[in-house]
Image (cartoon, rainbow, N blue to C red):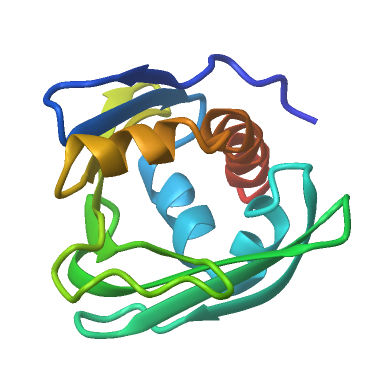
Length: 167
C-alpha cells in the first residue's frame, strides 16, 4: 500500500465556486485511468463510507454517468450527470446531480458543473484541480455543508493508491 502524500485543499474562488486541489504521487495518465474506468471507480467512489453498488459510465461528450453508494448506515446515495468535454489524461467537464428521493430535481441548467483538470507535476506526480461551478451561493454552501469534504478526502486517498497499483 502506498502512503498517501497529501490531502485535498478546498478554496472558494467566488460565491458560486468550490475549488478542490490535490497532488497525487502518481502519473497523470494513471490518475485519469482511476477516475474514468468503471471497475476502478467502483473501488474508490465510496471513500471508505460504504460500498459502491452501481457505476454506469459512458465516457464521451453527451454520455451519461451514474454512481450509487450504499452507506455503512444502510441508505443509498446516488449521483448522476452528463459529460460535456473530455480531453484524455487532461480534462473532464461534466454535470453532477445529487439524487434526493422525494425532492424536485434541479431545473435544467441549474445543476453544478464540475471541471477536473490534471496537470503533470513532474517526477511521476499529478496535480488535480476540481472546480465545482454552481448557480448560486446557497447551492455552493449546501454542497459544502453536506459532508462532502470527508468523503472526498477518502476518495482521493484511494485514487492515489489505485493509480500507483496500476504502475
